[in-house]
Image: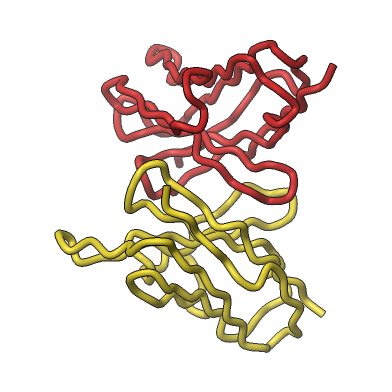
Length: 115
Length: 113
């Protein structure tokens, strides 16, 4: 069974970087596509980007140059880094499988940006 | 970006009722090449991650009860729950995957009276 698990700090200070890990079991990240989605307080959902089976990436233009998604295939993990965070980046962050149809999701990690 | 508009934002129904919720996109999600509408529906129960219910506007995922029915084409889509159960308490989201960036509706919160 495919399982995804997010991990990372729950509190980040403004202007710092947010770094999260998604650990995948039951499926190799060298197949398919792997993405990050976040849900803001109030239910708004935003697709952030993906990393493909080959390591190529695609990002939401709204995040401009602040975002980076990388991976470690030896550990079957992929990562999210979001730079220069503000309080508006406070959200629950999810990792999920697939290019477009998100069929498997992690349980989510809540990240608060506050000083 | 394609804007997804869901309505109503919330509704309260009794178990056994039929429920209909709407999702409208700012441009057509119909792919002429593949003859499908690139729209998914998700269910998010309290404290859980989103669960994929329906893709291609009307194709139920394996294991999803047949009381969940997706319909529509082009820019207008509907999720119908034919007979609501107490366990259907959740927020329901639509998502378009016709073009990047992928975008979601703002959700319809279903409450059970």
